[in-house]
Length: 211
Image 1 (tube, helix red, strand yellow):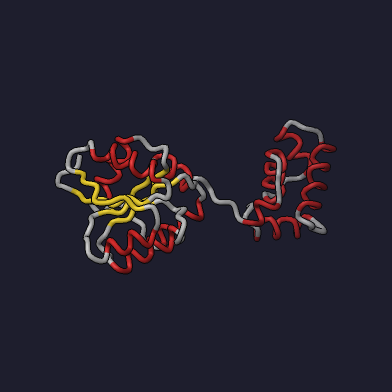
Image 2: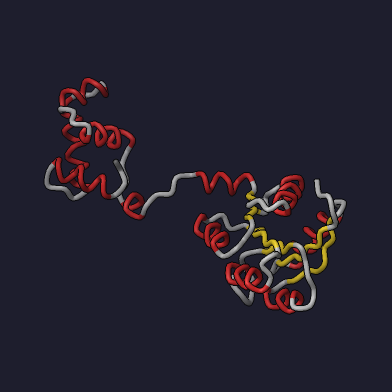
């Protein structure tokens, strides 16, 4: 739990959301809400003459992109902790915030306990995420090639066996399907990867991250 009084500024383009969040956080001992801001520039003007420990900010604001706001805050006051608090669960937005200095990213479905724990951990210098954000970051990121070429689970199995040098009969025995089904999968793979033969199929599949 928090050990000292922490001053937090809240930034959200929805006044009711910001004020509701502020009311909830104010009920936590040692948290003081120093201001509510509904656009980025109002916050930046405030920060010119008032120091805060932390900014809890949304990504979507009416006057400035949240990522740009984070970068500006960290440039002007590197010691100010910035936590994103947003509905946006896009992996790229999360990573862009971190790359521009954010100390963490939380989704708005986080519980009060989770939020307070993240605030506490951020004060200790940790990079923090709400549970759902951790899952998004941990999920494998598909390349554009992998997104454009869709393979069934069976096709992935056959592709792996082809790359391992298995014959048609060996693949059929291992997967408990007929050799004609294997040949059908092989043909589909050649078409999907636009390969002329098996050697080219393996090379292209490896280049695109499938092997």
